[in-house]
Length: 240
Image 1 (cartoon, rainbow, N blue to C red):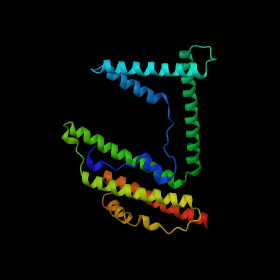
Image 2: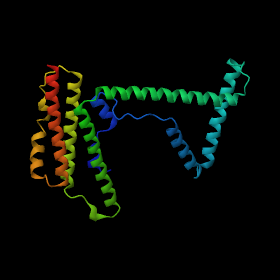
Image 3: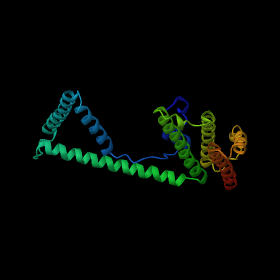
């Protein structure tokens, strides 16, 4: 990714911090990191590090089994089944219980998001996704151009990047404002100036470049800003 695209996305951690909600939270599946780890081990085992990888892997397995066997003999010597079988059963049980815990935690966090979801927040989250999609599309286009396809270079790149920066700032302001109103139902809306910096500029760009691709996208952002302002007025009337 080129330097001018760095930092333009609103990542999941930042989005959760801005909204104070676990939005876009994904269920942790224990088998996924295990598969990734196994893939790395197999990949390195096929290379020049094969002997080292096999030695380290066998050392970890044997050491774990020996340590587990010693603990069983010292503290649970009444168990009659083989220690290796008990290790397998214990590992599976811990894995299942941990996965259940992650599932319950994910369900609770998802319920929290649903209970606090507002019309404006739904619009903003959707536009954050579109914002990220535009950045991804530009990055892919840059990679294609870097591969030697000079004919795919993006016209008015600087203008698009500036529009992305402006839109990111506006989305951040909108998300902060939505959180204030959501968490303070009786808050008197006096923060419309949060949009004062960029909204007039976006209006001018919308009129002058509405026929272009990035102008159409800017128009979407402009509409989101208006939607959020309307939602702020709606929340004000509900809280009064």
